[in-house]
Length: 192
Image (tube, rainbow, N blue to C red; front, side, top):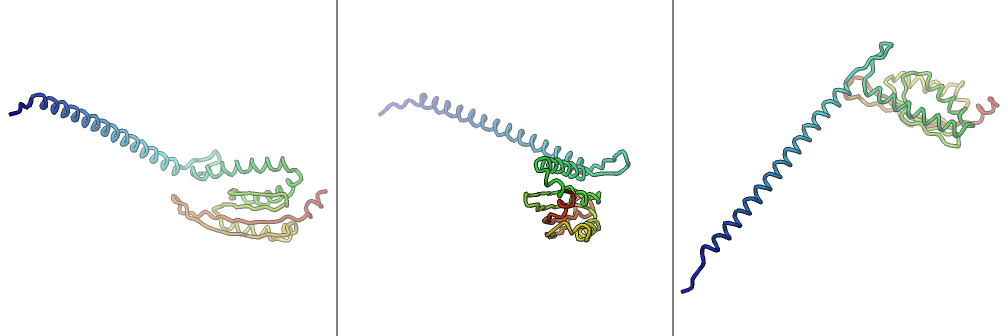
């Protein structure tokens, strides 16, 4: 008969079982910590989302008594940034400033417009996209641009699109008009 050392094998088995239990405990602790960290970030995200929705629905009142939503103020600030870019272009191309100042003066006869896009090139071609909540202002602007007094300075005027979208938090519609126009030399000739 062979002698079998059962005690020695039993000790190794106990040692392996102890290591396995510690390894499983470490994995459990790391998993639990990961879940708690994830839940913490998720709750933080929900709180930030709630603050954002509260801020976006907040109505602010100016010193003149007119109320604005946060979204409207954001769009206005974006439009002011676009205006600063347009002023930089005017400084870079002073000979073209006359054309585009003429166009902006006609656009800003209507206080409801915000400029979403305004691009000009060296061929005196302008592409503009304007936003407003007043559909009547869009029709009035188109009528003004097509009038004999103003249209004599354009060789081309194309209305690319007029679109409407319903704002999420409001009942009012947001209207956009996009147009392209090509100035002729008449305005420059009159001013020189």
